[in-house]
Image (tube, rainbow, N blue to C red):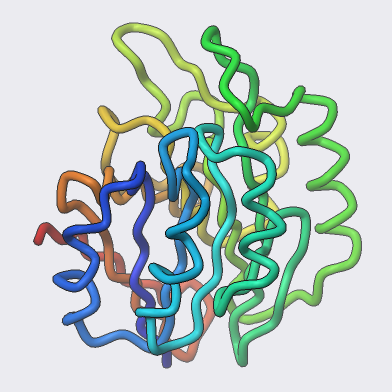
Length: 213
């Protein structure tokens, strides 16, 4: 069994991090937007405060250079990659699909499709298969007003996972299940929102608790 702290959308506001870290957890996963268009200099020091294994992907508001920063930090950068942790396989996709705002780390749907196709083709299937992505799947925790702004490519590929941990849309925090796949958006950590995920011993035994600090 493993308990994981999920946070996202810090946007350079790290004041609540210590409050999150007081929860009992075996690992931390960060679903992007660690900074707010930079700066990158504080990132390594912030991640060094996490005393358990940490896995992260960048968000669309992170400069693309954050990939190198994460690679040299105490965290594991999972953008375009995957890792097996006991009974959990954790795959990662950073950035987001296109937005109207031209943010630093955006990908075309074709690029997202290619990355996910490669990851899924190579990753080890496990008891729990988790996709850590900044952008949500299309029509799933992706509503801004009356519009759905998630990624269609993520939506097509999410059937290969048991759980999708996403972020990006601050207004659509929550937990849903679509076609047997659990999806969680923990909400912006900058406002004190996060989630705890409990992975049990059996397939589909995944508990999710939304938390506020």
